Image (cartoon, rainbow, N blue to C red; front, side):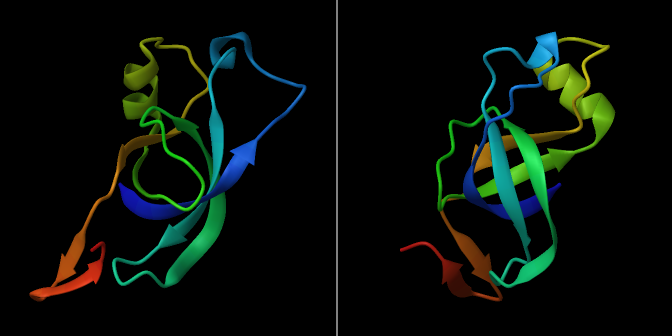
Length: 96
């Protein structure tokens, strides 16, 4: 799992039937302190996240396939939650 910020949505005319009707998000991977940490990723949205949200992401094929309920789905990375707060060492680093 990792934290990320939603940069926007991804639209493609080429799509696998399993992904029909699913929303794809472009993500920037973040450290807990909010600093970028790695390459951008595309993920299936299961948390109804929007641009600017901080999200929790599962990045493992078997878990992704279980979340969509199809063992042969071409899914690896899935947004599973929207983050409200992040606290590090007793200090609130994200949220109000």
